[in-house]
Length: 441
Image (tube, rainbow, N blue to C red; front, side):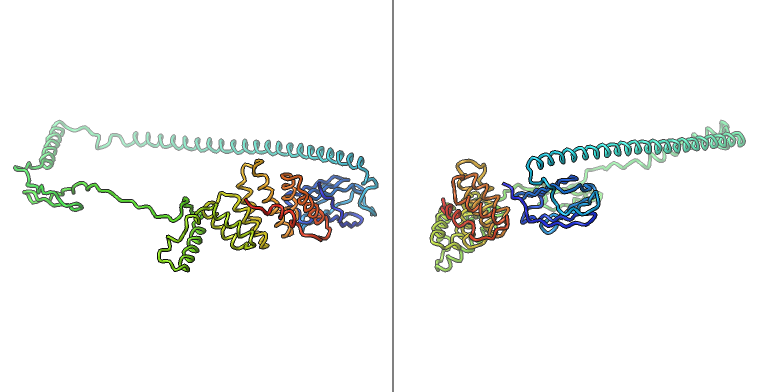
């Protein structure tokens, strides 16, 4: 059920109205503000406020700001003058308020539709302007390319004319003059002699006997220089590498659970504590002291439950933490450790453990309904102690849905609502409801 805000402040001048709406501990992310010329609504669960204004305001020039847990309205009057009161005369009439809400919503929708049409028309104009500009740029680029092409064609034509003039004026070149038959025969003989000389130079002498090569197999990783008869060295490649085997040894692990990098610091801390305990017992072989039961998270959970019932909350937290190091997928370990943190007034740690437990109770079914109810109650109590009343009321409402017959939960939820409405706290929340869920499994 929403809580109506009644503690508001307002002031006015001839031209405007200032309105302050307080929001105690509400989440501004879920804040919803609606305004029209004669109606204003503020919704921030669990708070709710609405007002039918005495006269009309200019909705376009009016504005609202959120600061320091309150909404500050600056309303511009349509007609100058003092109102003398903020509410309309029929603001307590339910039928009038219902009709005013519907009328304000219709006016807002019509105004938004008109604005959307204007924005659509503006976008269409901008689109047409962009198309015209693009066409203009394309025309300019096409003209520029055509002008450049024309200049290139003119340059080519001038070059061709100049080449034709040079050909006509110079006549035949000396290199193209006809040679006499004797000169042609002499040139052919000279060319044949040059070809014969090149062939003689390219011929390689054929060795009379094959070179002696050292056929001894070289060692691995070395090269051997073999000398031929004519004194030249010949490189011999080494033999292929020999095959072998590699022995792989895995790192030993003291714990029976799979290794996880995220849990490595916790495991090292736990093993360090075990090692120190073994040293205190003055045992030579410290590895034999660790009992197999201490490696069982269920045994550690039962041990922590016993410590809790004895009132030794620190020892219970250590037992639950050791069990979580071995297996962090058991939600009851987080839930039980949250109860220990709540008893030690470590409220933030309690909230974190309850949140982890609720994430592990997946899927939410009837079998884990009471476990989820316990976690929600403890987290809601921790939120209340931290003065986060909105979060506390949300957790208690969720717990009541899981256990609707629990009167202690309903009593605590009623106290939280009274606190949110500004009533002074007289009794602590969570005393009875937390004790109802103090049992462990």
